Length: 112
Image (tube, rainbow, N blue to C red; front, side, top):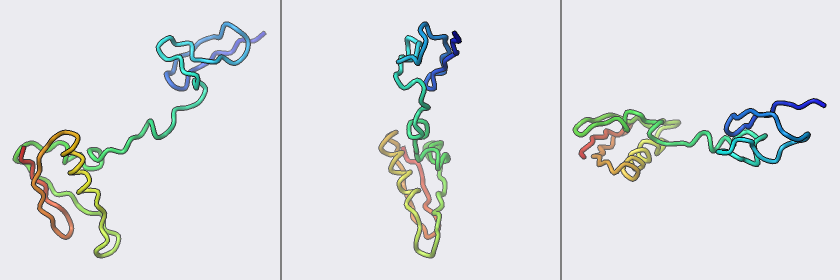
């Protein structure tokens, strides 16, 4: 009889099962996941936040400014990521910004 070392893909806990066969749950009392043998889904590991796309926006202090550039594929076909990032910072952290639009970038000034 061979008892294999088991490892939870969710919490990383390693244990030797008491019975022969595949365990139902993780042996860690804090985890107890029934999906211990399946890796965590990618969506749970990597959440998209606009603070990461534009870290300079998140780090602005009152009175400071920065330029957020558009990623333009063709002339006049830019993306709205800089504007969405400003709206995200406004909603999530309650920050206030003045936005001055331009053709290639938007200038963002933190007011409060």
